[in-house]
Image 1 (cartoon, rainbow, N blue to C red):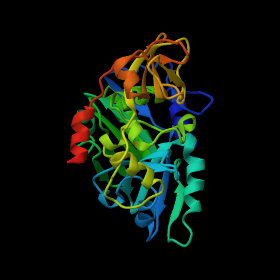
Image 2 (spheres, helix red, strand yellow):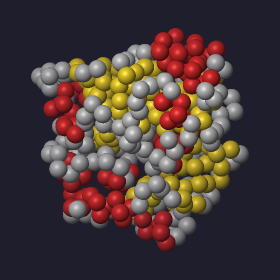
Image 3 (cartoon, rainbow, N blue to C red):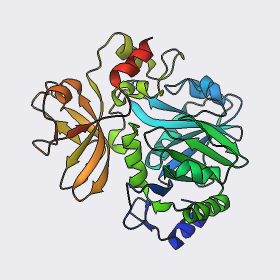
Length: 349
């Protein structure tokens, strides 16, 4: 974490856990106007004449469609088609940026560099160079409109205002990510706070990702999921026309020759401890011998309640109870902001 930014947050009342993730005491996960520190996310900057070509051969989405005003999701797979990481990609200052959970940044950067070979590509960890903050709630468009001449209007849209980048996040609640140099981020944090936004930590932002149906890959789920299992094809994170990339044959075979047996669902559960990414699920209807599924991410709602995304066997989710762990509490399934059937129909059209 940028140390100037950390000192600024500390003065604003932030505390840190063992993973260097900020929280603000009683985080109001459902606060109607929240200001989030996003230092738990890491950032890789990709530059060079071959940057686009290089990434085209590495990730699941079509980098050629990544414009100056559009960001996209993409998976990064191993040879078996299972995701090693997931990125949000956007262009900034002549570079392509890859954003992912900071806990996976080191291993992911090392692996990407292994495949550069003679390509004119440079990959750098710039996580501490640009501060990332988030603003969520119905207040967000109005507060930002008072500070900037224009805002991205569509989900995944991007606008640049000199050294500040705004990204509009998908989901049922207005939400923006802001990238800025540390000094400008501090000024923005103060001004947005004066406008009524309350500080919140990583869990509040993660809960909004869950409600938007946006997965992440963490250390506990690395190589656990083929992209389609996390609905990546439904949220514009997977291209079937872009050409070859590592793991592409497995991903394409699943789409055109196989039958998807697991997909990602949103759920709520009461549990004595917070479910962790990778925790197993069980169901009487599971016949695979590999369990009914695994947790993708979970965030607290207060007390012993948690909201989560989980990859679950479709037959188990639709026809039986699904438990957290062996004979643990039962998951209560909730709606996602997109419909499986409608989105899959658009993909096959």
